[in-house]
Length: 125
Image (cartoon, rainbow, N blue to C red; front, side):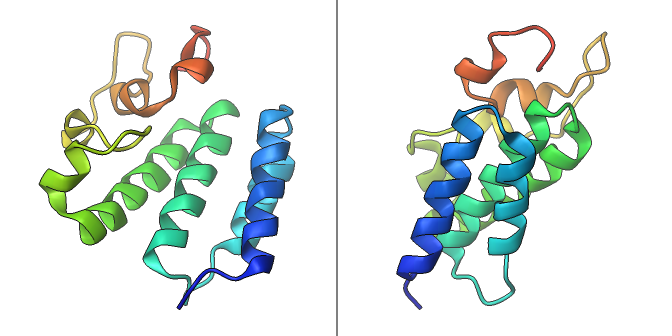
């Protein structure tokens, strides 16, 4: 099943909201897009987007769940070794390690998966 035009339009809308700092609006769209019959490629995009929205809102435990699920689907599509060679926020081989908590209680998993543009602030990761 290919991702249709409506999905692409809504995905772009969610990305735009997120880029404008409207994480709650973006989260709602991502949640609406997350359907049981969504193909793995679309599911990766939606799960990663949801993780980013939750992460920037400080909902780290929830965000980590979505990042891990996204990684699981990427591994299904490309295999574990293939994922290590792909660029992106959840694709590093380091990310498959069990998450640890730093001294401030933040997830080290998220510190490794969050893009630098989000993590430039010490309040995010």
